[in-house]
Length: 242
Image (cartoon, rainbow, N blue to C red):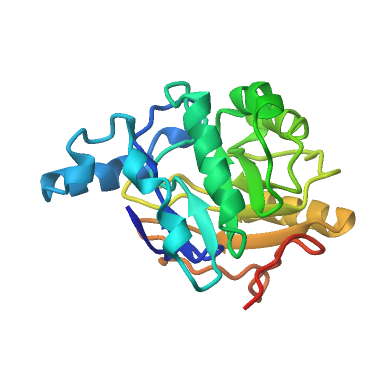
């Protein structure tokens, strides 16, 4: 339910919610759905419902026991702003984030409209980074919803990038992650799509993180762009004290 993460931009995952449902083309080959089915087949009691959305109330306070400061990706196996997650449950997660002030928590959602709608009713601790996923030009509108949120740090996960994106409205956005799709049905990501986003980030002084090219395995094609790795993180925001 929580574990050290192989995801390049975080240290640990924390899943007080598991399971989800598809809302846009980026969900088509969902890695979390494949993983949940595998865990159910292995008899993991947390996944007895497979990929049906499930709240795990007993996992909410787990970060309070962690001593070493770390970056924590919240709900790598779900979406905290799914319509079936009550507002009170979301607030309880945020309350724990505030208490666990030695860590930085990264929350990512595709439910941008619900995020914006609930934002005024939630408290926003400084160590919470909030982001939205964008897979192609059709979903750039999610950035506008994100900008309505009174968070200290806002970020975009452009992964899987499955189509070209023109101009990203990067004002008030602190961080952009880009990555290709991985898995047996991975869709192509073109280099010019990545370079265009990288160049926009450079022009706007937005931190740029290139995660992977993708393929059958996430490691198949490496993660260098034009001969180097890009691992920038938001500057001037809440950072870990190691």
